[in-house]
Image 1 (cartoon, rainbow, N blue to C red):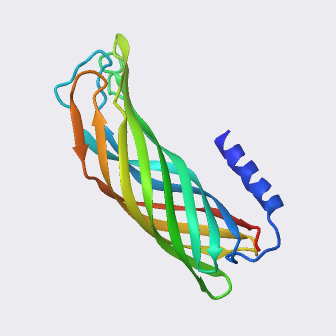
Image 2: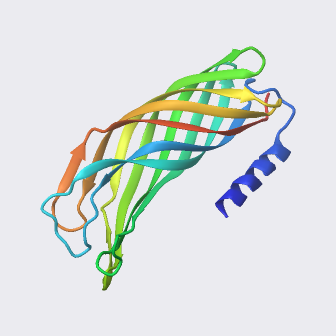
Image 3: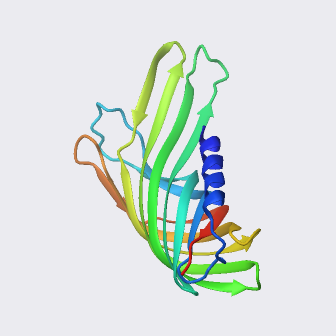
Length: 222
């Protein structure tokens, strides 16, 4: 279903694009991207527990997002992006009758606002670089089932992270209005999480790298 929706959105954008050249003043670029990043999370605990401490950790994730640039001039663009991330791992025991099948997962959401300096390299390559501000929130889950006992599910408290980020990337044109877009970046932030029961709390300063690639569609211009 997700793949079908992404394909439908891509086909819709292709039908909407105008004949404007990419990166003119007034042009808007819409991108659909897949990528990787790092989620900052806390350990899952039973909903009835009042933990003495909660522990923070970082976990890799796959992400999907949309991104929009609007060109205020031929070399500067406002940018906003938002997307979701996820991770899942399953451990299967040697003896299912004695041990549980364990599943660990997380989901996250992030949004970023920034500005990019844009430059043209020849006729078919556009590069961009710029800073931004990012907000992230995520939760971790664990599930134990089998082994002759009841299924147990635990969930962490929400982690929020505010940070600054910088990235560099490029758009390689495959037509006047469609490009392959890719980028790499780094973020530094302040993360915090409080236990759902009791007073346990954790704050820390995480940093990580991220990357993404996808298709970008240009439309509209002055």
